[in-house]
Length: 271
Image: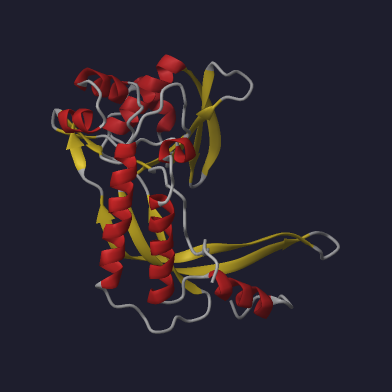
């Protein structure tokens, strides 16, 4: 950071430290603010499109994370450009220690055209895992039929589902919304015995799935990887469902869970 030639770097750092989670007390205040904000919502489903069951589990996850923070030791003071952050997704809640880099781009006239803060180093300090339920437990929790849950898995709608032998386990914080497709990202560690129809995956490490803008009946699969030219593959609804079931079922492919309000280091309350 000291080699960065930028006149207002001190001002950028000053602004960063105004909003960063620099101490345990500030981190706890932010977490408690979030818990209280969700507690006070009159109609959670209207605001966040989630069920009452999800709300209860989500708040329980936040409170468990608060308890873990309260019982752990933290640095009295962080060095410049370091901050605590936390994330809550379908699989877990975490607190991390992060280092930020300030980058920028200049045009031909030397004027700023792009600048931002990015995390370049991250250490996970605390982790609270969501419970992974059997198909029967999940069906009972969300008041649906067991057959419906199995159908959701087959159609790639429960992306946190994990297969252990012949049995499936599903995160308690996974929820399905009828008629609404959510974009997805998967990461590939390594692949063995890839079916011929998915040979296009070989050599790639990231799979992004979105609705195709030009033809809403198709899905765009974007493939990226180190030293690999990015490639797009287009699938129909049925092909996408079959493809996602393959991704979910493969232990060497990890779904990046949806993050609920990504609170990395920006405070959401008034001091």
